[in-house]
Amino acid sequence: MIESLWVWTLGTSLLAVVVYVIGTWNHNHFSKRNIPCLKTVPFLGNMGPVALRKVSFPDFVVDLYNKLEGHKYGGVYEFLNPVVLLRDPELIKMVTVKDFEHFLNHRSFIDENVEPLIGKSLFGLEGKFLF
Image (tube, rainbow, N blue to C red; front, side, top):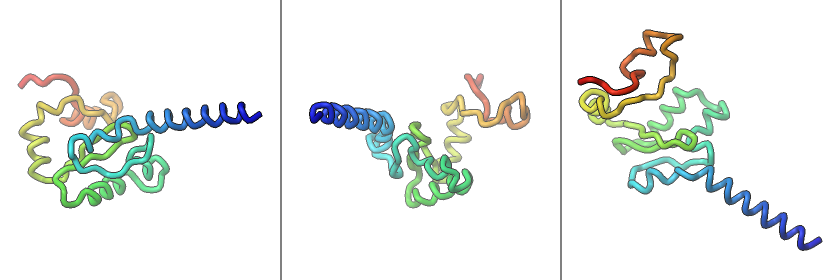
């Protein structure tokens, strides 16, 4: 009886550690690079309030922006994916205008076939540009 309890305890503990490691696998991406970032939750990253529908996405982004006050940029986690949040207007201008060709293949939020005007916008383009 005691032996099976030890086996179950050990198995459950091992499973909990594996789940935690998988849920936080990439959550040290910014700290390795000395980039300011916000505290995360396993699997949800910083997206907990949005995933649990406590706040709207625009309010959530404003909150993240305000939490990184005093920094030109910072790191947040969209579930397990690291995302850089730019705060400095000059840095935003440099990324969106001057160095735009280095930031290709943006995530498409709107299908080009459903909404062609927004789907074919500058931020929805994919692939290599012929500059």
